[in-house]
Every structure is written in C-alpha cells, then in structure tokens.
Image 1 (cartoon, rainbow over the protein chains, first blue to last red):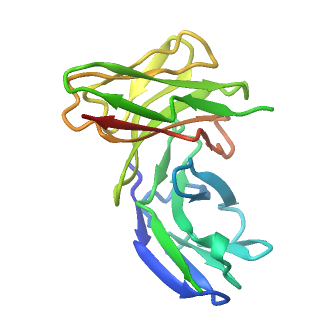
Image 2 (tube, rainbow over the protein chains, first blue to last red; image 1 turned 180 degrees about the horizontal axis):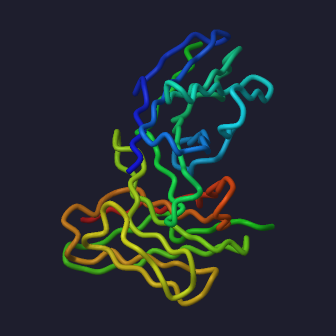
Amino acid sequence: GENVEQHPSTLSVQEGDSAVIKCTYSDSASNYFPWYKQELGKGPQLIIDIRSNVGEKKDQRIAVTLNKTAKHFSLHITETQPEDSAVYFCAASNPMNRDDKIIFGKGTRLHILP
Amino acid sequence: DGGITQSPKYLFRKEGQNVTLSCEQNLNHDAMYWYRQDPGQGLRLIYYSQIVNDFQKGDIAEGYSVSREKKESFPLTVTSAQKNPTAFYLCASSMLTGSSYNEQFFGPGTRLTVL
C-alpha cells in the first residue's frame, strides 16, 4: 500500500521568509496530492492540491510542486506571516483504488518567528 | 451552511466505559471516515464507510466500532477494549468519484480524555 513520508517534523522560520515542506510517496499510481493545514484544536482544512497531470500549482503565497519520476512533492509558503503557524499535512491518493483512501504524512509543525 | 459537525468537543470517560462520538454531515457525501490523531503520529485511519450499512476497518480498528445507518451519520464507539483511548478524534467525509480526486472535508474534532 501507499506510504507517505514528510519532512521536517518541525520547522521554524522568520516572519517574511519562505518555508518549504517536503513529502515522498511510494505508490507510483497515486495521482492526487492534497495539503492540509491544521490550526490548534481544529480539524485539518485543505489549502491546496495538485493532480499528476501538472508539475506545479500556485495560489497566492502558497505553491506546490510535484516530481512524479522521483515520487516527491513539496509545499512552498512565501512571505510567511504569523497566521501561517500551524501543522501541515501532505497526503497522497490513488482514486482508482476501490477503498478510496487518502494516506497522510505525519505532519510538520510550522512556527513563524516574529 | 453545508458542513460536517462533531459532538461533543470535549469528552471525559472513566476507564471501563464505552463512549460514542457523533459525526454528522449535510454535504451529501457518500464516504465517511474516522481518524485518530496523537502528537507526532499524524492521522491514523480507524474506520471508513463508502455506503450506508457498510463499513471497513482502517489501520487501527481494534477497540472501536462504527455504524452507518444513515448517509449523513457515522458515529464512532470507543469501547473498553481500546487500551489507550485518550486522543483527538477527527471525522471526515468525501464524495465517491472512482476516477477523480477525492477531497476530504474534516469536522472540528472531539478530544477524548480517559480519567
């Protein structure tokens, strides 16, 4: 089955700098890669996703890149702000699997330093 | 407003007692999921259901049970057989597509503490 590895587990960046979180996956048939943000005491919320027919997607300050050959994808946050502090999860899914499950990484706790 | 709700937000239980966590969605989603979240462990799948009256075990189903009598409801029972039930529990739902992406929408979670 699919396995998703996420690095780093904790990341601290100065406000205004960029943050990068990296994930690798094992199932070459996976073709959907969402990123979720979880604020303290709340459920995760989807912030951006990418499908395997594109290599990069951008939405304002956040972008995701996908390298299918190497089976890794990354989240990039530019001009970080205090409200970016949260736990971020990457995930991978092969929608053609009968069980329709999404496999999550273990999360990255992002701290934005003032 | 469409969404997914979980209740209660905080729940306390004595050892040896069963407890049921509620999850309701009005998104008309086919699939529903229960995850357990522990510090540093990410999201681990407990049970999931793709259709009414049917559900499957996830990666850590032991000590838990579920039912899916209605499309909008997927309650989770934490039984006394669960050895370490203190955790944050998240419910999610998604459309079943079979050939396209399947975004999961999460509820706000229930924090269960065993006293």
